[in-house]
Amino acid sequence: MKKEKKLDAKGHRKFGLLDSVAYAAGDFGCNMSFALKGTMGIFWTQFMGLDLWYSLLLVIVQVWDAINDPLIGSMIDADKRKYKRNKFLAYIWAGSLGLIVAGALCFIPIPQAPLAAQIIIFIAGYVIWDAFYTVANVPYGSLLSLISSNPADRASLSAWRSVGSMVGNMVPMAILPFIIYDSEDNLIGERVFIAALIMGILGFISFQFMIRKTEIREDVDIKLEDTPKFNVFKAFANFVKNRPAVGATVAAMGMFLGMKGGELAVTVLFQSYFNNAKISGVVQVFSMIPIIAFTPLARKMVVKYGKKELSTFGAICSMVACALMLILPITPDGKGMVIYILCQLINSLGIGIYSTVSWAMMGDAIDYNEWKTGSREEGIVYSLHSFFRKLAQGLGPALVLVIMVALGYVGENEGNQTAAVALNMRYLVAALYLFSAVMQFVGLALIYNLNKKKLVQMNRELEARKVGQKETV
Image 1 (cartoon, rainbow, N blue to C red):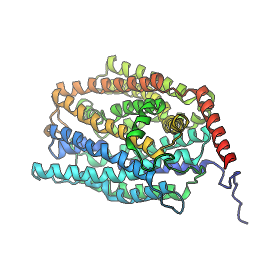
Image 2 (cartoon, helix red, strand yellow):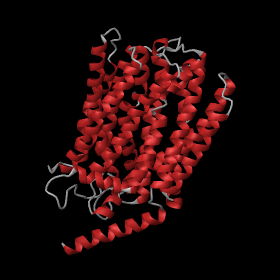
Image 3 (tube, rainbow, N blue to C red):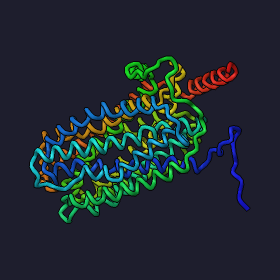
């Protein structure tokens, strides 16, 4: 006998574990492509032979990011076509299809190619990858506020999205170093290209699961109420006035400046300071244990304490851990690595608390935009947030590479940097993480203004406004 589905008052499937798992699968799909971005620095400086050129190229491709994210966000907002299920899901499907091969285009292994050819290959590959990634990622983030309007449900979706992101990062993080590095801690570039193709296929499969299992419960039209034409400048002005969106964005930028900006320095730290590049992924995966442990508690903790309050506490934990990482005697031996790992565990707890609610905070920021301006503008609000995150992810590694070169890093030396350079990387990593934690604290504690009490007020007034609009129809 076929089991009947439990439906809510609107006839939709009741929110449950399937919704959270499906949403997590979407970020797993994103990270099957995005996780390899951390290998880009090593690939292009050590295997392809670019140092400061790579730093300059990263800055150049951010110009495309500046056009790409808001452009696609506004395109989604302005799309009035009727879709069988939901237009966001349609865009995600198209983006996931392109990502099957787009990620690999950033790792075409031809180190003997002339400099001009390498530059063209890098820019073309990155632009194509970034376009498909944005087509999938921008509408994916906007889906959270349409799957459910319940704050606890959104907290669950955000927490599970973090799980999808973590697993999507942890799998390649733990396995890839054993595949792509040789016995002398040097990168084997040809293997990175093959790995990127395999990860693209896995990401596509994950996206298809998410698309098929996602239930859209909030029937919200993405339209511009009073203007016949989409006004990007007005939307950007609204974004700047949206304190929760700005605060969440500053915190996210801080997190990624540390996590992504420090990836190359961390790799060199394990190559030349701890002399074990292959174990670097395992150590980073181990440091994620606090995030995994906290995730099941996120929903109850949010209900009890509030998102802003929890994430601010997490930022404080990270600041303490990173300050200890900077001042404690982390020596290039087993004892030093243990101290490094312990500091990373505490830092990871802080990041984990924030990351599990970060997307729910952006869902609330989209509601805040509607509360204050009368216009939701999900696509553009999220795309601007995504743009600044990408800015941190792109400019962070570029600036850090400039600092690394100034501190003596030479890409051609691969995994055999001098002892002085290795020691510099030890302090650079700690300083980067500390700066990252301070930025998170500023964004969450000082700028983001939707505490638990104010969030309740906002949701109550928005619901009353919707009821009033229905009564007047």
